[in-house]
Image (cartoon, rainbow, N blue to C red; front, side, top):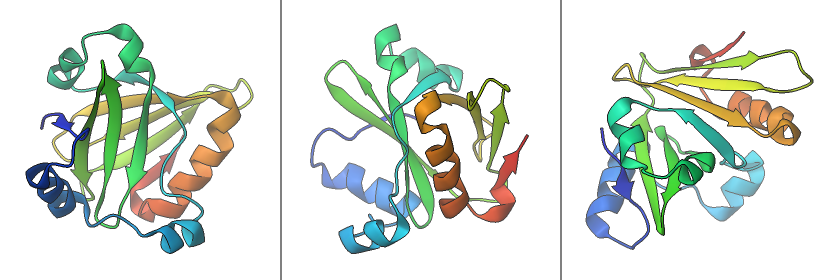
Length: 146
């Protein structure tokens, strides 16, 4: 697993992302679904090799998740580049939502199919909309509320 540079229109990268996560969802379908991506979140933790690739702490603050038909893409910025990791929906992937009891703050913990653990913290103002988005897009057996 590695970051892919999504900044440019590279057909090879696009083929990898589409094969892993499915084709992009069209505009009308996005509107019907109520959106396909989370608001900006803090990236708290990622598998070690991936976290080392984002060399500046200020770049780790901003990431988001885009949902597709067969998987999801975790996107973040590093300097002037947009980086992404496509993750397919498979039986061993799950998302845990953990609230800390302070009025809608908490963390999203994603365990990917390779056993890597990702941790995100949405802004408190976006907590409810993020949970609603996860409920709409993730298969029911992959979302666990704690």
